[in-house]
Length: 166
Image (cartoon, rainbow, N blue to C red; front, top):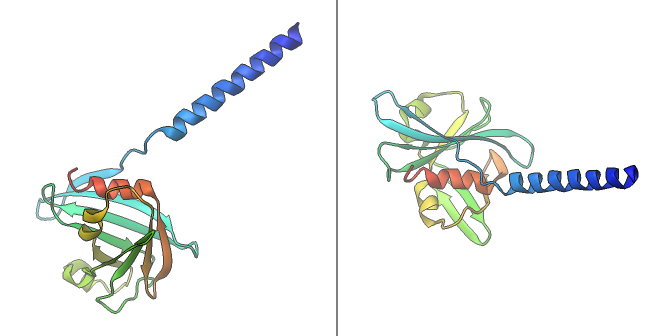
């Protein structure tokens, strides 16, 4: 009898653990948006994520919107100094399934990035991409001479999409 009771308790414990794991896996990812003010006092809302390309190099992706909801979205890609050496303008290629986008290079339009000789960041116009996305689809980024493929998971795309009205 104690052996049967022990087996029933073990089975119940396994079932509880399995259900708890499924509940956690099914929980939606919360957006990691940060609000602050820039040097001029304008509100800035941003999403900051660290991702690795297929060569296992780390990159910081900062998607942000300055000003009120509905403003232009920008994507800044930051690597180690010297990693983002580009002939500007160089478009950022984005793919999702059969869909393709070319995001305009805005790096030289940003005085801070244009004057920074470390070659650690580039900035792109994210608005056209976000305007065309109706789902949080995984994306693949391609930046010639910098990285060949940088996967962006759906939860990051959800954060970027939430910047529009957030």
